[in-house]
Image (tube, rainbow over all chains, first blue to last red; front, side, top):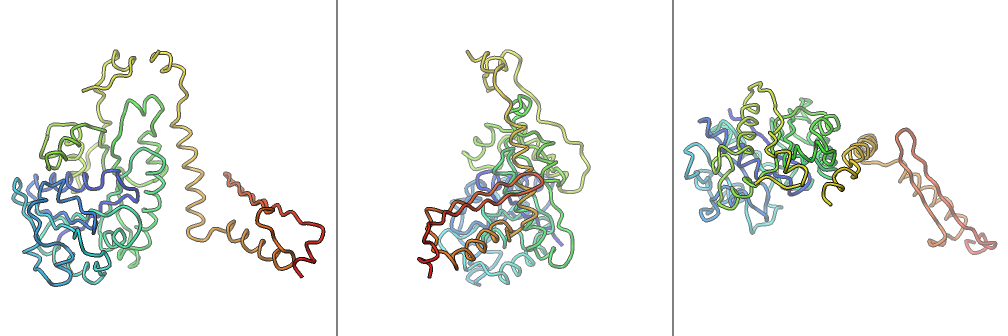
Length: 271
Length: 86
């Protein structure tokens, strides 16, 4: 049976979709069978980040309502044999996302995949609560910034109370993925440090993704960063995060400092 | 120019950290029901039973700090307030 992961954050724009695509691809690059599922009904974007926007025929709501079979709606990645996408609906109302429907689809997917990675919409409304509802594991994506940390704290509270696992009295496994981290700014005391965020949220760290131009470049061409530029610092950090998600105990290193003393003094950014 | 700014600037991350710790301590303890807000509403309702409240003459201040919270309700009562209410 596959493992269901929800990628969530509360706040928008922190990197949920980017991280869903990158972690999903990284796991598939290890040969595991992965499906990434977009729960952001009405504002889908995972298809675009995965580079499959022109191949969407059916979506999650079509499957829930029985208009399409799961196998018809799943889109196989053109680069990785074992990576699939289940897109969200762009036009339907999100009220069509029913709890029983979602449960049925997730259970179906669990039979066919090793990993089901659910990309949650921002906020704490229906889409977000349904995305986390049947998760075994949660990846909480957080930026080192006050509003993101506050919203993550709120989401952690929901993961511990509103999920099926929590209602059964089980502990939800939660991991922190710190994204858009800039070691230089943290060293200068102008950005929350990894330890600050960890102490405040007190959940284990899955990885630190450095702020990187490569992430934007990857989204420009419609490829997860682990495929677009597998040697980049961001991709390496996602590969390591994926290995930890799969249960490996890897030490976590801070993203390396690429700037020299001259650049630091004059405040220039590395290319 | 840049170099002076670099040395003179205050570090802001510690402030972020302290503000978050304080805020989250409150948000976690009062999940959903906020006692201070409840008290504010009920106290004002009791006063309104006896005195006609002029919204412009009511000031409510809430200060949440690390160990205690204070609720300050300042109601300006005109001389004939009780007559108006009756």
